Structure formats: C-alpha cells, structure tokens
Amino acid sequence: MHITLRQLEIFRAVALNRNVTAAAERLHISQPAASMALGELEKQLGFLFDRQQGHRMVMNERGRVLLPMANEVLTRSAEIEQHFTGKTDYMEGTLKVNASSTIGNNLMPSLIGHYNRDFPGIQISLSIDNTGIIAERLLSFEIDIGFVEGICLHPDIETIEWRKDELLIIAGANHPLAGRQDLQLRDLENESWILREDGSGTRSLFDELIASRLGSPRIGMSLNRSEALKQAVRAGLGVACLSRLAAEIDLRRGDLVVLPVSDLVLERYFYIAIHRKKFRGRMLQHFIDYIQASKD
Image (cartoon, rainbow, N blue to C red):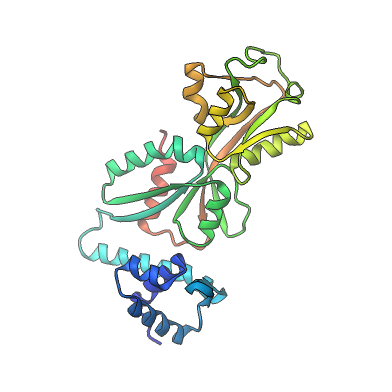
C-alpha cells in the first residue's frame, strides 16, 4: 500500500466540496488528475464516497473515518515542513473559524484583528452562522473551530466554556412598559415577541427560560439577524430577548431600553466548539490559547 499526501489532499478537497471538479479547481489542478488520484486512493482503501446524481459525492462511513486522519496527516506534514525550513517561530497558514451571530458580530472582529496584528502569517477566515449550522460544519470538518452561544449536544463535538454573557429583555424607547422598575415575567404575557430564528443560541435560551414559563408567547416574527431584530423593536413591533453585547450601542443612544424583569435571570456562557477527532496542530492550538487568554 502506498498512500501519498497528494491523494489525501485531493480526498479532503472532494469531501469538503462534494464534487471532483470543484475540488480540482480549489487545488488548481485538472479534473482528470484529481479523479485519477482519488481513484488510486480508493483502489487501496475501498470506496470513500457515495456517487449521486449531478456528480455530487457524499462521504460514506469509510470516508468519514478517514477524514480526521487525513486532516491530521496533512497538518503534521505542514508543521514538519515549517520546522525544517526554519519557520519554527513564524507560523503561517489559514484557519477557518465559524462564529454565531452575537459572537461573530461583536467579539470576533476585534479579537481576530489583534491576532492578525500579532501573528500576520496566520490568516483567519471568519464566517457567521447560527449555532445549529456551525455544529453541522464542525461535524463535516468544513471548519477548524466554532464559537457558539450554547452547548452542542452532539457527542463528537467538544464545547469549552469561554466567557459569560448577559441577555436582556429590550423594548423601544416609547414602549408602554419603558421606565417600569417593578416588572415580572407575567407582565409580558400579552407582548408580541421579536425573536431570533430556530437554531440560534439566543432563541434556544428564550425557549428554555422564557417561553416555558409564559406558556404560549405571541411570536410577532423570527429574524436571522440581530440588527433586523433591533430595527423591529425600535419600530415598536414588539419586545425581544437579546445579548447585551448586541444591544449596547442602541441602549447608550436611548433607542432601546431594558425592561428589568425581577424574577428572570438570563445568563449564559459562550463556548469554543471543536470536533473531538480534529487534530489540534500547533497553529490551531496557538489560536485557541490566544482567544482563551484574551480579555477584550
């Protein structure tokens, strides 16, 4: 048996792109060359993909077992090359980071900016999705690491407690309840709620701590962006549950107000999420340590 790094690299690209042509374009090689290399690998290991209509290729169980191993071999290979070319103190490469909305919009730009300033050889590719999508992308090894607003329950995903967050009940400045200091949750029974979409960490916390006590809260609308949610609340369309991080600027300007509900505690943690079988190479572990140590 003779497996090459190139074969593993092409296998990984096909696994992520689900198509040989797209994988070849990503690696800047011809489609026949990619097909030949993948075919040679499958001759040695057995079929790694289920071929579907439209040239779509989905990993089978054998492929899913191989992917984390291939990732580890390719990462270790890159580290060996760096070590023996005199780059032991100068890491370089790309990390694919996925963050949920509150974290991605309010924390990661500053953190990544500082990291890029200190370590310019490492490029951070950041995308923003809800917690459910991030879990799916971690499981398929499309990303290196995720930052989420709740624990991922899948057994293959490890969540590491990172930092505390506070959620608020917010309303427009002209809302009838604005200025009340003696509110309890039952005072919000007849309010229309403007909420994040299903799958978001904020929505999950609302469902667990608020909706469960209100019985059947009136859902005015569900939105997948915090900015759209705030605009709806500012327009007087309802009240919302939102992270203080996301609402802070609007609160300072007076466009939104906090409804202080005395019998409700809305605290949670942000988490670092990573696949348990993901090899934590030097660059990835360095990034994790940096983020955990940061106080920004």
